[in-house]
Amino acid sequence: MASIKKEGTSWYFVVSNGVDPVTFKPRQIKKRGFNTKEEAELAAMEVELQIKKGLFFKGENMKFQLLYDNWIEEYSYTRKKSSIRNRKKSAKHLLNVWQNVPINKISKQGYRKHMNSLISNYKYNTREGIHIVAKMIFDYAVDMEYLNVNPTDNYDIPKDKVDLNKKKGGVFLEKSELYEFLDIAKKEGLENDFEFFSFLAFTGTRIGELMGLMWKDIDYKHNSISINKTIYNPNNNKQKAELNTTKNTQSTREINISPYLINLLATIKDRQENTKHKNKDAYRDQGFVFTCNQGYPRSYRLYANRLARLIKKMEGLNKHITSHSFRHTHASLLIEANAPVIFIADRLGHSSMETTDKIYSHLTEGVKEIVLPQVNELTEGYFKQQNSNDHLSHDGNHDQKNDH
Image 1 (cartoon, one colour):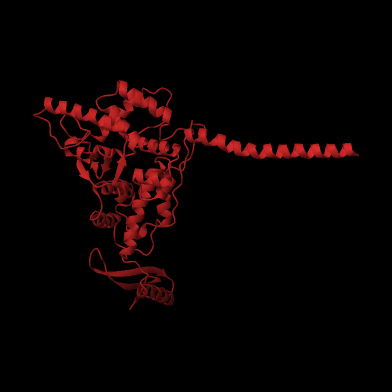
Image 2: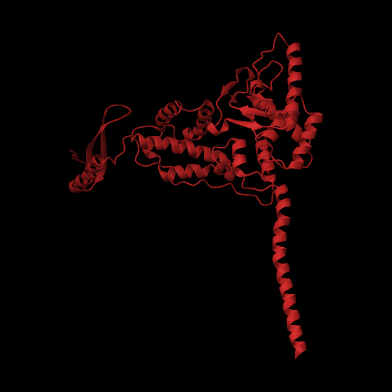
């Protein structure tokens, strides 16, 4: 039952709303500023009706930090370390703004204002990651009945503006560019650079998958490799690298490889055996294919530095190439070879063909060179036929005139 009281010249009401989920103390909803007792009574009745219908949220005293802590604890039960790390990284942007703010004070308008303020300083992918984790946190709040409405609902992330004055680049290497890069890696690369980047380019594996490749994963009889794990090493400490499961179920797969890559494995094996012999006291043989001189998998940072060193030697290349670019390069080569989407999705370990379509809807320059002449031939065929018909028509009219 609501309590209606007068304070000075105005009225206010107090309504009981159960127990606070944070403090476990009785909660009261108090609103002031009514001109008459009747107005306060009517407003109190509306709030009581909302409470009975379950439409009044329960988390009005909960701070965003506590909501986040509860959510990340539950999220961590079923997620990989890499996923948890990425979500925490994205959530920092939210905590910097709303850490001590009651969650019922975070409105749709306030959320959109904050997200739009990030446009000038963060790329689309970063902002998308922040939005995804925010939606997950507030979905959790709604599911736990701390809130009625998710303030992130119906927010569309603005795309990055495209500077048309900049030369168009890409996240993959054209075939000619790849061949040039591998030539440089073979001639000027450090130990196993040529072999490592050749495998990235011609298998389409993710870098963590290739770093986790072991000798027991090689099937020499069928010229294939088994992708069944990935390296997790966020701090780039080679001695603390961990084995993790693949990105998804479909990412665990068999990849057929060329006999040339099989030969490269023999080169790597011979080199590794020599290293073991030289460093027998310090070498820790864990069975990995690509290792440092102590037997540990090399770090992500080392490969990034080695790649940057080789890319600098390619004159005129106006592309930001990362290790993941070789995965895109492999997909582009498959597209150029007219491989069906289902084959590409299976080889890359995508969760669905829709993923493949979404990522690789572009065409490489090589595909254009093959396809465009065929398109032009179809176009020219029509007009040539029309010209031929027109010519025959004119000839017929000419003959009729001569008959007259």
